[in-house]
Image 1: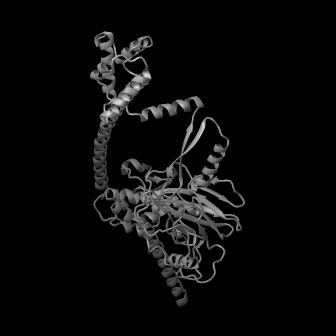
Image 2: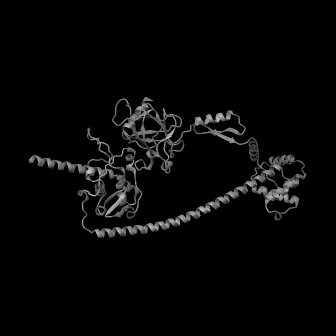
Image 3: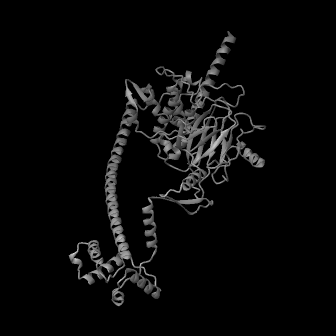
Length: 558
């Protein structure tokens, strides 16, 4: 056990270089996650993960930062492509410690986590399961993890002595199910029957439960036993040779005896057996098929006279079973016709939707053409002169809005937010010489049009950041709000507003979407937004320091 934990610790210290779901061999057992380069005994706040219990599932944990962990779940037995369930515990926490858990190898494309569902959590002091607030749960497609689906949720530990347990939903273990079935079986209820159907791959019981009234249960067993008996093939020659029979049981024995003498397996279908019985009864009673509306009526009419007949041709049990089989076939035929009608209606609806979709596609093409023409007209009105460098202009109309978001969970997911493409002319509103970018952010119309002719994503993003925040705000902020690791005594600066960062990404996305439709290229170019803004902040701080040096030099000269 000690060697296993040491090996896992070494794996965690090296980061996530060893990736992939194929190396996950078993659940983690009291696994302590240590930061990279740390040596010594674990301290409070170094989380200990455990999934070695019934219904537990957690195969690997990677330490990303002090607040973030990547979790890998194990696939289902005999189904390596299905990865959904997780259930694990966390201990050795600090009070008020905030973390983000990323379950990075989900296999489902659609999940209820997108529609408000949240993972379950409980602790030793609060043993009742509760859901994490849905505002702290995010489910998205992440290209950084083999294009798998990732579920991230933020959580704050509030008691140091508690052990916290997280699960996909309410767990229901195999042991609990067996105890419940054992309690039901000990009551000896007439309407409940439990049978062993087989064993699973892991040698666990597969129970067959039958719940019905005692009378129906007896009828069910009799019908099952009757259907196990193979019906012999009947022929008119055999009936003529058999002569008059006064007892149903004697005729049944004679038919079975003739079957054993033949030694051949009969494979007549139910439909052919019914036709043979109807033809035989018609010959005996002098009836014709033209006088009856259906074979079922022929059966009913014949059954009335069979009570008074001494020379019955077919055993009553065989006759009733054939009649039941015929009725079942009629019922199945009705169900099939209903399914065909339902499928036909669905196909008609799909055809209508495809027709409407084609009309929408053609209309969208016309709107795009109109959008390009309007942009060309606007560019012609602005003139063909060189665009003014927006990096040198400080916006006067935009008031800085210093917002400090305390919820770090929104900041953790800003790098994976990709807005949906929207036509430019439909999205941005022009009013009184201002352009509305969204979320109450307005910029000068002339500067906005000059920004559209800027070459390169880097220059475009930097100029747009200056237009939205201004240089006075940017020089005192950072993108993530985390202190740099290059300086030991560095003080973290307030982070930029998340909704304004999303506006910058949306504007850049609209610009990139007009140039390419490749999702991979769009994702790569959007992932550099934070880098561009960081470079701009560094440039502003550098220019401010140079200005201070010039002022101090002038002062010294004076």
